[in-house]
Each structure stands twice: as structure tokens, then as C-alpha cells.
Image 1 (cartoon, rainbow, N blue to C red):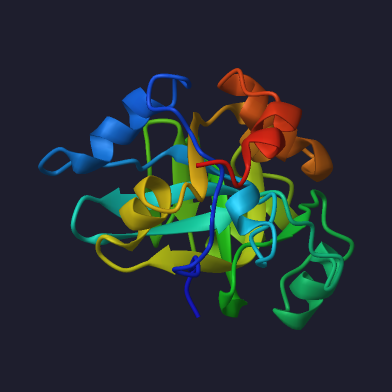
Image 2 (spheres, one colour):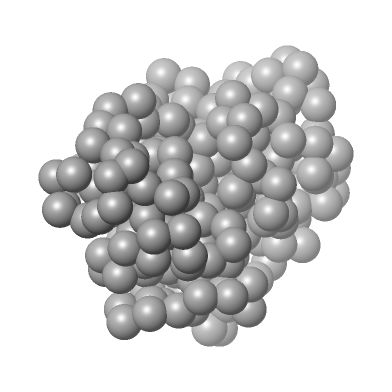
Length: 217
């Protein structure tokens, strides 16, 4: 299952010059353009989908090649971090540091991805930007459990992905996503319920105004 928008969905009408996120959109249509490191912010076009009010950090994107990202504002109540470490037989118990778990997306929900600051890298780490790195190995969990590891981190179970051209179609044709710059507060903040509004505020969009525009051609 991939992040999809139904062909018949009527999203909010967004004037091209109304929002500053448009300059970010231009990156995706240039040859070799990338939106990697930006946030996808769900619009009301996704209100009846599992991505309602989602904020997704784009870990990889290349124009014409598809994209992969992690939902960063859906708290996963179970398993807890300690339970996960116990399942993976990672000491000590209790751990010296803890991470909250996010439901990162509908694909590979049993696989964990740690998005973290780039002050730590290990085997299997993939730089995303100069300040963010993605690690899918247990090395980073062992470091964090022992009290070390990166300064900032979140653990997402599962991810979202798009085929070549699919994300651009959802943005341009279906008005499904807005783009916002990623900040430490939004990406690694603990108040998951506030992240959607924080991301909209970062591009000067009032959620009430956005909802009010939904469905108007």
C-alpha cells in the first residue's frame, strides 16, 4: 500500500502565488530536483484517508524516481520503547535513554527507522541532509539504550513511499500536500498533536483558512 489520493478527490483550491511553499515545489520539477529534507503537510484533500493531518519528513526524493518518507506526528502507543528493546534483546533494562515510537507509514510496519541528528552515524546510516541522518540498523538503538547515540532521534515503525511522478501528481493535481521547511522543533518535538499546526504556521497558513478553502474550484 502506498500513499495515494483517489482520482476523484476534490482538494482545497490553492492559488499558486498565495503561499510561500510554491518556491519549494519548483525544486521537484527541475531536472534532478529534490524535495528531500522537507516536510509534507496534509491538506483537507486527505481528510478521509489514513494520512489525515499527517506531517511527513521526506527522507528521499528525486524528480522522476519516486520518494520515501516517515510520518512524524502519529504516536504509536504499543509497543513501548522498553518492550521493543526487550524483544530485540538489547540491554540494559531499563534503558538509560528512551525514544517515543511513531507510526511511520503503512509500508513495512514491522520495520523500524531511526531518524536522527547527524552528530552520530553507524553502519547502515544514510545521510539525508547535513543535519539529519536515517539509520535502519540496531546499532543506533544499542547506543541510545546505553545512554549515548545522537542528540535528537525518533523511531518510526513503517514508512510511506511513492512511485515515480506519484508525489508530484498528489501535490500539483490533487492539492493533497503542502511543503514546509523541516525544523528541529517539529521533526524531533514530543508534542505530536501540535506538529501539523506548527508545520502550517511555518509557511504562514492558518488551518481554519485552509479548511475553509477546501472544495472550492
